[in-house]
Length: 471
Image (tube, rainbow, N blue to C red):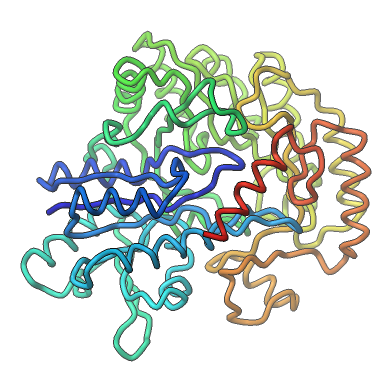
């Protein structure tokens, strides 16, 4: 079958992300004998024109549309990415004949599948990992069977408006999947610095799916499962070598929720990259951990230059409240090792979560001020610290229950439109004032929710982002 896969993301402010999920799906469907095209609307200046061109020239028999991020997770200033995606879905349904199925999927959709289907008056989607589920859907359609009967990985709204969801379909052996197909992607269009129109570009890679951590605010466990499934280090190194040698992608970001969950896997992966003798620079989402410090020189040797480090807090009490199984020392020691090895850090902080007080924020920020980051050619923004105010409340998370118990949201409240948890122990005005005070003393602490210490060009790019909502 002819399958058009549309990446509905229009996110251009923070980082332009290559559509790796769509590339995984396309590679698997091609392996099954289907004809596949990818259209990434992140790169589109006129989504209607590009959709019309793709649909008229390719004449798809089925369309899959991926919804990645719902919003920017920043408060009080928030970019609601769902609005332009909604316009895309509605326009696709105008363009195609009713007999052409439009199937929604992606991580953002998976989290809010019921809310999105009902908001769009749509009836079908894929929840969780899409490779096996989508392939099964195609088989059912080709055989003239109802795809709602697929056993796993799908959701739908029936004729009575009732929502149904089957269990997700997890790929147990990730090495069974072909490498994401990059021939269908404009690889040199994804810049490390999205505020520039040219410069160094990057690609992404996944080394595992699933997360064993239990952070109260995170939706990864719901989307990918609570137990990690690892790719073999040899396969990871082979894919990196392919990216560098065949596509010229020499800057790679590991998109796992947390790269360093397993000591042996990190160690073996780095050794395989070194063995391949490939010239690559890589970054990753990294949890601070003193247990991994002695591995960091090996990481550096294999090409690590950038770690997006989820410090979240340097308050012992707040780390416990967030269900973080670590102490502030883990972050401090990890950061010191990064400085020693000249590895860039982008440290993420969250203030205002359950149990937060002005005192715990001050204690956390005071310790953060003692950390001196290595200021290299940063991959993301112009700062070393990204401060998030409040916690975006996602369904299916412990934070949702906490927010309901604390009266921050109503029980069963629709969370598609962003809702944020701010500790009832803090007045928002006092919180904003305190964060700004520390921001004035630390100009490399970015606070996008307050529009404070943002890099040059950020405001202008935000205006471009907002303009997308009008189309």
